[in-house]
Amino acid sequence: MTLLSRGASPAAACSQLGILLADVIWTMEHDSGFQSMMNRVQELLSQNVAAALYRSAMEGSVTAQQNYLKAYPPPGCSATIEGSGKDPEPEMTDEELTEYLKQEATAFLAELNSDRSLEVSKDPAV
Image (cartoon, rainbow, N blue to C red; front, top):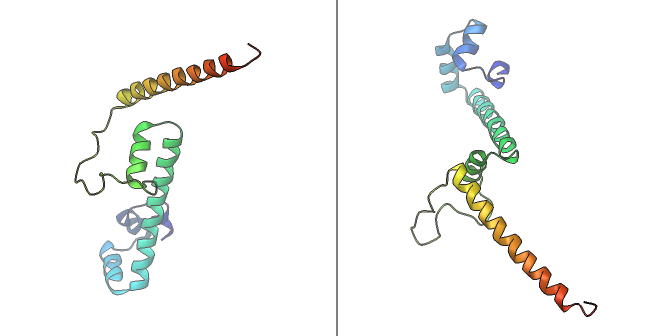
């Protein structure tokens, strides 16, 4: 189990320990406790990958962000529009997403500046 938890394949672990892979398979089929431990190790290894994906997403990788959100959507979000049977919009490339976000940020800043200029003109001291 230690070798498996460090990422070794069952075949590599068996080879290193000098046991037959067939014996491990037989044990998995006949010992539910052993099978449970094997399943738990696989779950823990996949959590390592999810953690690496999350870390990459938080560092700004758009692809990692998309993959993470597909695997772990926030509460209230879904991959399709509920009840419509419509597919979500097609995925954007990193470049398309970057351009879209730049446009949205520019529009937001223009609106923010517009609101600020209105506040200044309403000031009685002006």
